[in-house]
Amino acid sequence: MKVLLVGNGAREHAIAERLAQDAELYSVMSKKNPAIAQLSKEYWICDIENAESVSKAISGREFDLGFASPDATLAAGVSDALAQTGMLVASPTKAASRIEWDKSYMRNLLTRHKIKGSPKHVVVTSEADARRAIKDYGEVAVKPLGLTGGKGVKVSGDHFTEIDDLADYAKGLIEKDGSALIEEKLVGEEFTFQCFCDGSRISTMPPVQDHKRAYEGDAGPNTGGMGSYSSGTHLPFTRESDIEEAKKILQGVIHAMKKDQAPFHGVLYGQFILTAEGVKIIEFNARFGDPEAMNVLPLMNDSLTNTLLSMAEGQLSRPSFSDDCTVVKYLVPDGYPDKPHKDACVDIDAHGMEASGAKVYFASVYEQAGKILTTGSRAFGILGRGKSLDEAEAIAEKGCSFIRGPVWHRRDIGTSALIKKKTDRMLSIRGKK
Ligand code: AMP
Ligand code: GLY
Image (cartoon, rainbow, N blue to C red; front, side, top):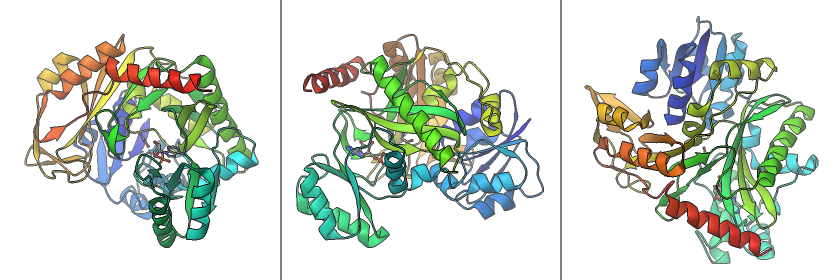
């Protein structure tokens, strides 16, 4: 089977690794990811956020199955362009990926179909309305309606304390985009719950907790994600009923989208937050999470190729997952995220890495004259896997030591100290109810 993958980050490296196990892999990338290139029979470099440029890159070629992976690629209609060439496609159409690129549509969909989990929210188009909503809700999150790469949200208490600053931020968004979304601030522990969808049914993956803040102790600016962990079918702070509630919301969305004539075939990602009032939804993504894909894909007991095929055909197969624990730590350039050190050379001790049991996924790096260099973004995802979180964390940490150069990572992700902090915090939040 000839499978075409569009994307070139660490998440796509994890996808490519699984696809190449039983399919002939071809890829389209915006920059050459050396690891994906090595797994691919052939690859093309073009603007993957432009459907026409992807179509041109693969013109005259035939594939059985296509998968467009990153958010901006989906929003650009690349899945639709792949389908036009006659291949089956396992990623959502531009219309279906609206659940990610238009937060106003997303909140409306939940309201119209009476799906639980939204905080109080309003879309505003003037500074006066923004100010009114901020005063009314007390503590808020102010965000753009479109794609933000996880970085466009400002939250009361975390980023700003003054109403004037929040209103100013909303004003800036309104001037730029015409509108802004104001939501009541949710307090709790966030978790990622992803599922495979065939337009009507879902099959869930193990839940994961990502760490968006740049610095240890969950401090500093938001990033695309500094690392993540999973621990089987539950996280240390979730109860069975929380996961069931989240699953109902995911299933509700898939039914609602089918009814709305925008059936969703692909991976649906729910960014949930567990609050004193139960499970709430922060946002949906129409794709695998990055880094979360690196946690869950290696745990799949069944073929990813077959699962993608079953989603595209509307005949969902239900892959099972190992109960092993995983920890992923992202190595990022020195100075990241504010002033990242670019074009710096990094050395990988591949033998040491292999002997440690850790796995390295290539993110935003490039190759020049046989050397690996950083860009300004996250550089490598290091995965540790074990029977316990402690074991997985120790392997990931050891793995990080085999990459040398001006890069750093959050040492606290997946440690028992940080996990205890999160579990205690959740207990105290639940207790307050
Ligand atoms: P998003 O881009 O919507 O995923 O938001 C990025 C991050 O902002 C989330 O992971 C949360 O940490 C935070 N955030 C977004 N919306 C809210 C909200 N309503 N309440 C509290 N935090 C939020
Ligand atoms: N880990 C956050 C995201 O993929 O959006």
